[in-house]
Image (cartoon, rainbow, N blue to C red; front, side):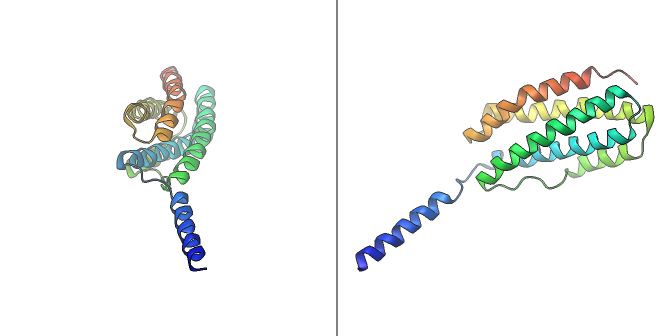
Length: 165
């Protein structure tokens, strides 16, 4: 009986250990936090553009940013959860400052500032994802970054193609 009890305890310990997420590197954890924060920023700015932009091309671009980045952040959230990592719950302070600045603009001034922000933000995001795709240690996180790179590069191209305001 004692042997059965010891075996049961050992099996429970193995099962509990198997359910705990594997430890991931600081760099991979940082990628998740920064990527999710960038996504939250794109969503917030896209929603702001829906209200404050005057250009139909900016509104159309913004709607796509909200849709694509919402989907990406949902996927990233599931992946992060499986790794035991918390995604960002809000944009980083510099990103929040950008959102706050654009809140006070309207019409063509908003369109210009939003367009400039999208070019800049997507260049940064592409670099972040490229670094993870090339050097990420966790294979699932690295594959996620690789899968998202074409989408981000497309966003970068679309942002570059927004008309000058």
